[in-house]
Image 1 (cartoon, one colour):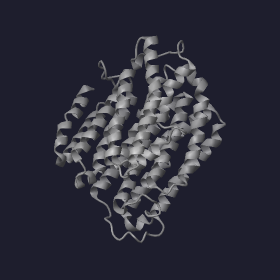
Image 2: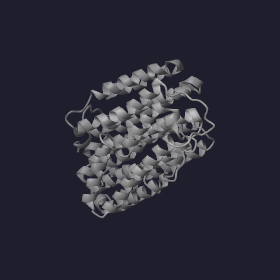
Image 3: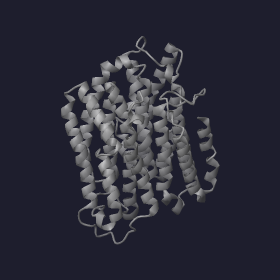
Length: 447
């Protein structure tokens, strides 16, 4: 595991040469493919050292992190073209990649917590340094305080586990029912629910997305939301007994909240805000699946996390492509794009179809598994899930139809149809999203 970490660390000196951003991008592609071929075939822990190790769920999320970080640099060409501190920007992106790699590869709960919190610092730099409006300071403070205040009880819970079990090693954490109480359960779970985020503690996410640059939005939606789901999957072996008792609370709150957020999406006129709220709606199903604690719920939640990471990141890229040309994210201005940018209309359609879980995308596999697990857990959830699935398709169609059809805003005179870089960027989001479903065993049969 350390060889990939050293590879990433030795990319940092290249940040001194801003004109070589394409070289950093190519080397990150190289390490992504090298990591891809280090697949843990036996579905158990491998590459173990004193600090780092890898199993299948770590492998999938590390690969997603490396892939999204490559695409972040590719999407932020305007930073390098206009000279907005390009050297520091690449340094922040590589630092964030290193933090995420260490977070997903940690085999100790304490080192996981340290890297989990450290990944917020580069994200905050991205929002404050390359955000668009003065409100980015408020958005950064929201992000910091929501996540940090919710994470302090998690640190206390981790120290309590060490005091009770004598170990924080992830693959030794089994059967904590002898010491786990209700307050301990809430302390351990709440930080991850805020990070995902769950309805009622989600207010930091739309503001952070709206104020962040495209790279910040991509990494937030693509990987940082998955830290919460990953943490829940790691700590539940200790919390299994109390998970059955408290599960109904989280499932009901997340699914009903997801339904409300889907209705909010139908009222949005800001493209970025709409995609951000749709992330909350999708993550509500992931929370519900994990909290059922059954086989299909846990496996399908992992599949949907990976699928959502690629799909929402691609949608944020599309919204940024429109923003760079028209200077606005409003659906009132970004209408009739099929006439102005016909070459992009196909990508809008393909990624919108993936967002509403159309076949053959990985979203379909994740949502079918989650629907079956939630209905088998309680048939009463069927009514909420029907409306949740319906409104998920409704707000995606609303976004696609309003952006591509309608009258053209008279202030738009001319624009470029699209660069090869942008087509490559969108293809690298869409292609893995539809290719992974050919290897279902990797995303589902890992428990």
